[in-house]
Image: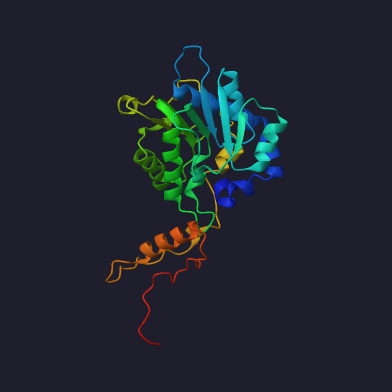
Length: 293
């Protein structure tokens, strides 16, 4: 039984030269990536005015999704955190512009310049704390807030994702709603264990309040092939060596000044951002010490 890639190692480490080349050379992955990208563009519902749009491909990898965007007559900018994936995209001479970027730190694009965004199996990576300084809520907030700013008014963003559980799905959805987006989850083939796919469909601007969600596909409609990629099936089962495997600590009460563990962790994170040398967070951080030994 395999494991979810995002729980095995950080993306820039997991997708090294070997894994990136193996991913791009798999005919089944290429076929499924194309199907998912076509569906994402369908849910994006771009105006049919024969005018090419500038789209964002978040977690573009080696450019498989970008090729689908190009085939549909649009221009695109691809962002990915894996240098190995981007190197293969350059070798394949994809038509989009490529950026090495960590989406959890924000996108850093000019406001209102993007006509739409898609992402295939990438957003759930933000729910992991691969480093002690990573906070999934803050990383999701930085991502969705910056995405909202760079999209033009009324533009949409569609994310195909594999949430690990209900809590992770709600974490992602709430972060998007708090950033100002409207929308929700569209599920294709909800009663099929193999074909089931989830898409987070978001809209920004005033149109987001009035936009209605597309109904997900059912077994009666043409959908993805039954021989879904093994990697996709494996992504639903994983083990991980990150902070979530530690035993949960008992919630500590605030002291008389209202400064408990959470307050201390926030202050330490602020100091780290300023470049100060701050001790590592441990189970003893914020714990009340006895008056004497």
